[in-house]
Structure formats: C-alpha cells, structure tokens
Length: 132
Image (tube, rainbow, N blue to C red; front, side):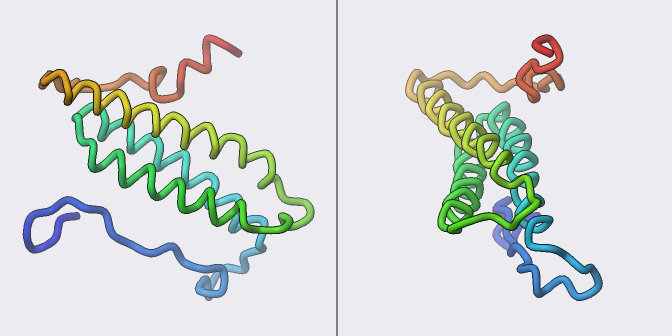
C-alpha cells in the first residue's frame, strides 16, 4: 500500500499476544508465528530483489533483524515450543537477505539495469526439493 505521496513503503505493527482478543494464543505459538513470518518476509524480499528494489530488500532485512534481536534477548523459550529450532532458520534468512543486499549493491555499482521478470519457486525455496 502506498501513502499519499505515492511511496510504496510497507507500514504496520505486530500485535502482541495480549492484543489477540478472540484467539487464545500461547507464548510458544506466538513466537513460532513470528519466526514463520520472517520466512514470508524473506520470500517478499526475493520478489523485491528481482525488481532491483534495494530499499524494499533493506526494509525486509531490518524487519527480520528486529525479530531476530528481539527473540535473542529472551532468556529462554516457552517449554514445549519449537522456537529454538526455528531460530537457525531465522538466522539463515537474515544472512541471505544481507547477501542479497550486497549483491544488489554490486549490480548498482556496475550500472546494470537488468530486471528479472519472474522467479521460479525452486529459486525462492533455495532448491530444497533437489537436496531432499
């Protein structure tokens, strides 16, 4: 969604667990959902990267870093949750976004203006099907 100036900056706020009034949400479910959200943010960043939108990729990186840093400040995760397993995926997602931003900066520095029209599902998922 754009603002009145035509800027396409994503804006929003993550709801806290207490703001979910109609859904009983356990802490582990909330934290797991945040980790899952970062995967969606990473997929969106790939779409922005194919359009050579460095600002969009930067925003995605900042979003995922914010969630990562917030989760790392927790002394422990709720018992019975799988958040600790999802943290590795989150860290890899942040690394991929950092690498993508670096590669975009190299493309911009060389003056290239190539824009990819589409990205297939395999490249978004990192080719996992072939490795399983």
